[in-house]
Length: 234
Image (cartoon, rainbow, N blue to C red; front, side, top):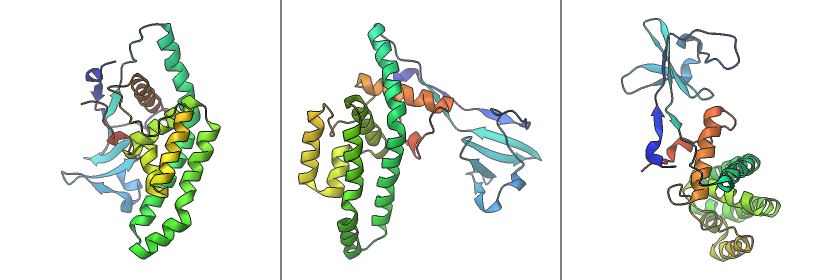
């Protein structure tokens, strides 16, 4: 698959009718949303952002206007043979198992980062001393329980979400010597904790990116906060 073929769609839905169907886009008049949650766009128009439906809700001339987020549609990768096709669907099964664990680890990591940012140097040293093993212990359990492929997927997702590979995250929380040994343990199971996520250069990453976008667009998986910040095209 060539990422130059990505199709970006901006869906503008005007005068939305409210239906009782489960899959319908439901939008209330702007006045019915909590006023403290309203935001203002660059043109000075007030709107409510619906996180679940990934849409901005406006009210223009008494009419409800829904502006959907950018939707990225990826062509399914081009398979050279049946083995490639089988691997693609095999990877999808692994993604389903790993994704909940990844969301937990990502939230833990971000929480620790946020708490450390609000501490002075002395308090930060005490916090690190008290909490430095928590996230790394979580990785240890996950890497021990997951298969090799699932461990690779987990490491790739963390790199996509944080911009850091798992080695760098562990080094940040536990020090260079610990990170070195974690990388050795990973390589023993064919999991390179220093590997980067690159869907342009790596076939597995290309498949994984296609599966993420497909599952997010269809609603089978919920995007993690900040998922759209990673750009799959150059």
